[in-house]
Image (cartoon, rainbow, N blue to C red; front, top):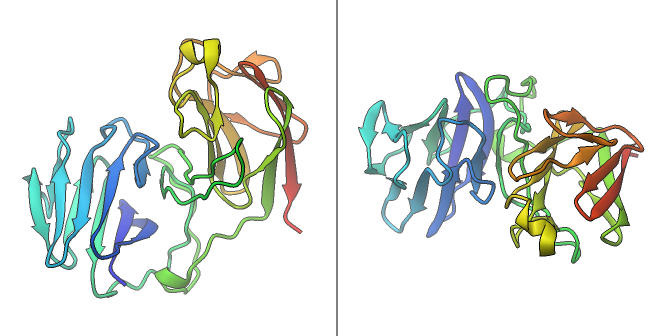
Length: 256
């Protein structure tokens, strides 16, 4: 399996399959396939294209550029074991499965692949965890190969609509829910409220087995238990979220 291995310093954070005739975008915007929440990374920073004969990387007019094997490049053909540096992160191209990721556990640190599927009209699932890029989630010794390792979580979060929506959104081992006026947001805020919210207004995410909400962009901030969200806030059982016209009750439950 051809793959990209993402590293922070010497720690492996995630592994991304690289299918034939496919592309992966990398950047700070949540719509990217590989999402990196780091101020040194542009919204849409770079793209990896796996063509019939070559794997290529292209800088998408980013602010800080990228390096291939420590050399600044705008566009480059990649070879097995080449390293792409973007901000504080490195992507290693592993075409022949030479890397044995014995210390790799898929985690929720700042970078993930968008992989959710739609479950209802009120929730469109994706995956992430925008944590502090300087403090990636703890790595654990697993002895497993990268392609067989799976996420293991001991808790689940449910969002129950009280006003402004219907039903329940479950994270179910996934890593984020985006709230905002972007049509692709998991919880869409439109109408008059869309004028004061950002495309990604707030993000609910998982770090290890703790859930957080953070403000992302907009003219006003959402409320958590009656207070405006100014810094990432831990979500606890029975917390109340006020997201414009939407009111949500938080349920944190152990996985049975």
